[in-house]
Image (cartoon, rainbow, N blue to C red; front, side, top):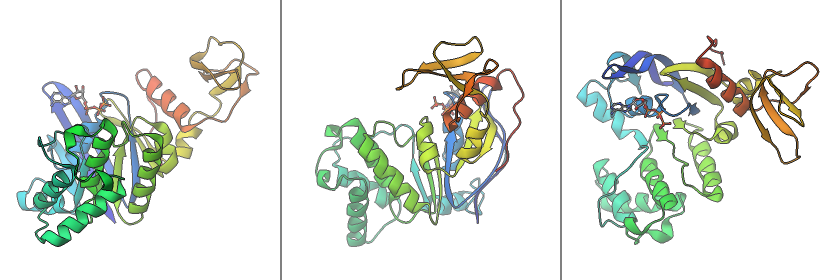
Length: 289
Ligand SMILES: Nc1ncnc2c1ncn2[C@@H]1O[C@H](COP(=O)(O)OP(=O)(O)OP(=O)(O)O)[C@@H](O)[C@H]1O
């Protein structure tokens, strides 16, 4: 089933073209959205979360057009959204905050709603913090609270904008576990700057750069785009775009290797770095899945 269907979607802020004709179909599973700062990820996710409308092109979410107010309301009832930045009503406890969002989501049965609030707080490990005022939570706990509200009900579509920022390693793993389980039978789009997140739990990766899709495929395929471009040596070579010393003491280098270089297995991160680094100068073909 196609949950998200974008056809040549464009959006500008003033004269700046932020989305330059995005065409994308997304169904069940996790799609990881990567891209450098300013690539247009948040703008794209705001369109997918019905917070922003595009200037051009067509958007269909869960088979409906969000331009139509009643369709938009129907989409929102089945949508979980973690925005990049969130404000909290002052003075609320964690429980009250999630309950407030549940009321906005039209969960009218008080007992069932409270059960659901407790459930999502438990999923993100905040059950013990139910009575704590939101302003007293740490940054990572606030992020978990925002994830909790996105899990309310049974959202068919989940749009998560850098949800793992500020999470400690254990919570990051818990998050992967939660999202992977949810994505068994729903559509999840998650933006991140963590390429290891993408490799770990996103079967599909889209790289956005300067408002366009530069890559759409598996993490393995993203890694394969760097085949023959990653090598190891003791000293930095002139063809290296990037080089860093690894735990074994050698320099891992990404770029144009010298003849006879000791090539190493590329990672998705290497593929991403080359793709984004070269996009400014070269025309990079879009890879298929
Ligand atoms: N409301 C706005 N008004 C004007 N320009 C905006 C607005 N929102 C975003 N932009 C601009 O649009 C471009 C894309 O921004 P966007 O936040 O979508 O990128 P991003 O890929 O999410 O970046 P980051 O990784 O830094 O969060 C940037 O140049 C940004 O300055």
